[in-house]
Amino acid sequence: MKKILSIFTVSFALVFSSSAFANTIGVVYDSGGKFDKSFNELAFNTAERVVNELGWGMIEFESANDNQIEQGMRKIADRGATMIVGMGFAQADAIAAVSADYPDIKFVAVDVCWLDDPNNNIYQACYKEHEGSFLVGMMAAMASKSGTIGFVGGMDIPLIRKFQGGYEQGAQYVNPDINVIANMTGTTNEAWNNPTKGAELTKAQIDGGADVVYQAAGGTGIGVLQAAADAGIMAIGVDSNQNWMHPGTMLTSMLKRLDLTIFEQAKNVESGRFESGINILGLSEGMLGYATEDGMVTSEMAAAADAAAADIASGSLVVADWSQE
Image 1 (cartoon, rainbow, N blue to C red):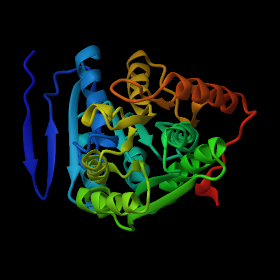
Image 2 (cartoon, one colour):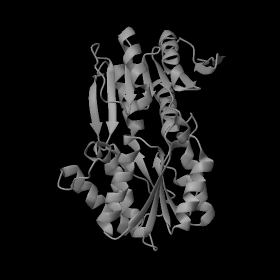
Image 3 (cartoon, one colour):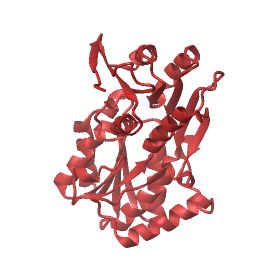
């Protein structure tokens, strides 16, 4: 069956497949852009997996700004989506409004876990990013020769402080005297898509002695990883496995398995087993981890991180959530 793709542009882009499919996945991307090599691109790749393995159609939406999200989501619903994935906390209001008007469509809200859901059609998925970041923070401290490591976040919001907090706690777990230089890129959505600023912050951290830098900055993180590679220091990717981008300088990547969430919910929709609700997902649920392929994780690092992960999953080691502070 040939897929027909069309693009509509009215200050936004909507790409859709024909309505001949029994099921269709819709994806509304966050501000970092579809090809951010991280958060959004992981959702795109997962949607393609749904298309290829489950035989679904696909509709995508990228907005120029947050004010267009609800409009685009409604167009996806009108085009016949069976399940709509909203990427990021900024889409909470749109999901709440659109899900109320389309009770037969199932919604997966990534990084949203506070919505009222009278129609019981929203799967809300939030992650314990601080737990996964704790593990890569341990590795950063073990890999550092200078005793100084860096963190570059995107938009200065509670969600990104979860990444920072877990990273710093993990590093201090290994080396209580570790020095952590941390910077946020900005306070608006532009902070997610500014690789030049990411590179500048990374260079400043390197000048301050950092020899490992962790980025949690969306598209901005591309500049962080590039600057680290140019300087010959180690970097840590985020969300998806970014080790392939700069083999030889990538220590690891913190994996946030929203890909598993999206694919699992597509299968649940298809089988009639979709269940709405708020889901807080961490190491104990297998939804966080770290990447070793194309990375520089030693067996000693892996053993230490795995032991800590087991303790965190069991509750014997608690990582503070800085978004609550």
